[in-house]
Image (cartoon, rainbow, N blue to C red; front, side, top):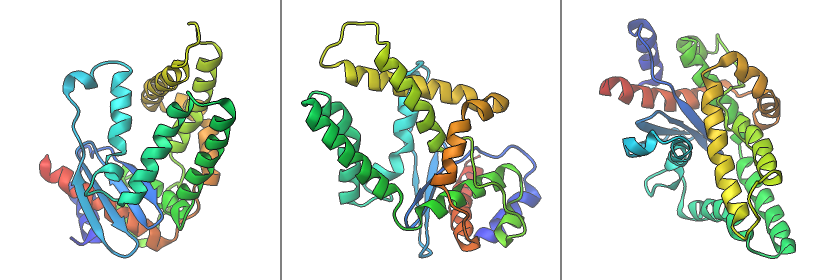
Length: 261
C-alpha cells in the first residue's frame, strides 16, 4: 500500500463521514486505532496491524462500566502478544498499573517511595526516544484527517495543529482533580479497600465526563484547558518524516475501515 496515493484517493473519492481515530505515540513509531482496527507504523518503515477487542454490547451500555471497558480496550495494542510492546515492556506496564492499588495496603512510607519510583519510571518510558515528536505527529495526522487535508499534510504544505482535545494528556489532567476530590470527600467510613475503590470510581467518572465534553467542543476547550497547556510539554513540533510515519499508520487503519464498510 502506498500511503500517499491512498490518502489522496480518500480525499478525492470519499465525501461521506470518515471513522473517528485515536492514537498513541511510541519511541519508535505511532499507533493509530479505530473501534475495530489498529496499526503501528515504525520509524524504520515497518508496519503492523491488528484488530481491536470488542466488548459485549450489554457491558458497553452500562454507565461507568462502559468507560472502564473503553479505557482498557485502548491499551490493547500494547498488551496483546502480537501487539507493539515486547514482553518485558508489557510486564513493566502491568506492574506500573497494578502498583497503586496494591501499594494502598502497604505502609505509607513504602507506598510513597514506590509511588515516586513508579512515576519516574513511567516518565522515563513516556519520554524516551522521539516520543514527544511522534506524539505531535500523531495529533497532526488525526487533525489532517478531520480537516480533510491529508494530501497537503503528507507533502508538508499544511501543518495542522499538534494539539488535540482528545489527547490522553487532557484525560490525565481531568482525572487528577476528580481523584483528589473523591478521596477527600469520600462519604463512607474509610477501610483498607477505600483507596482502590476511589481510584476505580475516579477513572470511571472521568471517562464519563471525558466522553461528555468530547461531544461539546466549546465546553471541551474550557474544561480541558489545563490538558491543552500540558501538551506544550508532552508534544514537540514533528519533522515531516515523523508526520508521514503517523499518516502511514492512519492510512492502514482507514483502509481497513473503508473496506469493512
